Amino acid sequence: MSAAPLPVGVVGVGSLGFHHARLYATIPEARLVGVYDTRRDRAAEVAAQVGTTAYPSLNALLADVEAVSIAVPTPAHHEVGLTALERGRHVLMEKPIAVTITEAEELVAAAGRAAVVLQAGHIERFNRAVRAAAPYLEAPRFIESDRIAPFGVRGSEVAVILDLMIHDLDLVLALVREPVVDLRASGTGVLTPNVDIANARLEFASGAVANLTASRLARERLRKLRIFQASGYFSLDLAAGTGEFLRLRRDGAPSVAAGPVDLGSIVERVPLEAPEGEPLALELTNFVRAAHGTESSAVTGEDGLRALKLAYRVIEAVGSPRVEPVT
Image (cartoon, rainbow, N blue to C red):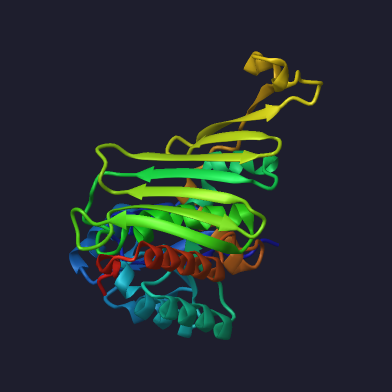
């Protein structure tokens, strides 16, 4: 017998929270009970759009649900998250999981005491290109990431490392699964008191290296990930959800030392395919199933904490007093 739909709610229905509510309304394993936002007119507007109830208070919503997505501004993650977790509610917390490491540790501890799911909203784990590459990934040796975007007010209250680069920090931690033994970084602020563009070089225990760049000073968006391993090279376009794997041929490729050769005689192009699916819908479905106990959480609270700790190591390595987050 299948479990009854999980009663869920959304706390914070700005541009991102709206999509949480929209998608919960379409997931058969979930039942969208309502939304809450400190801006009552916004809550009422979203509730009308998705066919649910706008609750007058956070506690009123928590009384009627078993799980919530929290998409409030980052400085409020800790307070709102603790309130929900201490009520025994499962929580999907948008990234970064908290403003400070201490706050994140308190959220993880609260979830452990309540024996509930705390999932971090690192949505790139559900990107179609990443899912398609997963079956072919084996011991990456070098990872290069570029994530650039036009400037926007949302997220600018923290360094670009916490706003954008943290997506890629989480990805490389998931791909390499080793401790970072050396880290170098540089960055600067241009439009805000915080760092707006940054580069970080991470070296892992095995010698694997990741080189990450994040900027919110571009005219256009770009999200590219390149992964090199002994068997070949991945080029992933995270924005488009597409990519290719150029795999070394196993049928006696000519020696490069013998002179110039046709690349096609050395490598073969492996199509990367994964089922269609909106990444946020996949993330929410995984969260609902984890709360039901039918699937493991793809990005645990501990994962979110590890990514945040690494982000602060990058911030420390940048070494500018302008990188402190506004709280």
